Amino acid sequence: MFPPAHRLRTGREFAACFEAGRRYHGKAFLLFVLPRAEANAPWRLGMAISKKVGNAVARNRVKRVVRECFRLCAPQAVAGLDVVVVAKKCLDPRRLDLHQAISDLRPLLIRMAKDLDRPAWPGSVDPCDAP
View (cartoon, helix red, strand yellow):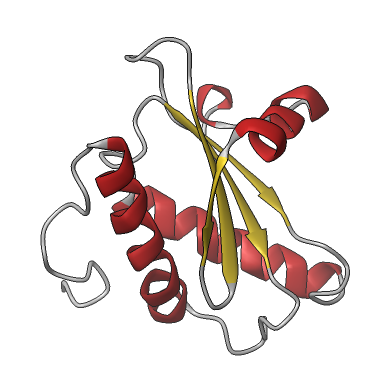
């Protein structure tokens, strides 16, 4: 779990991201990104995983993998942003692992970083390849 400062919690926070945030489409995920009012504010992550993805066990697996991906890879790229990750129904949660999540989220985060003029990915090496 992320600390409360790094979580989107209320419906208003999610609605603001959905309505005013920029969209980035990937194969299995859709990102909604909204810059926060304070530039030095911590990043916040929210997830919208519908029942179309699977049962509660499958949805929780997707959430765990996405949280780990952001924990390892995204803090530099998403500083001062609210990010909502939406899992598409084509995602197979039984086959989802950290490598697959990173391979789908990485291009989205790089594109987002270019659009917002931020550092893209922390290094050119995939964090899953590190020992």
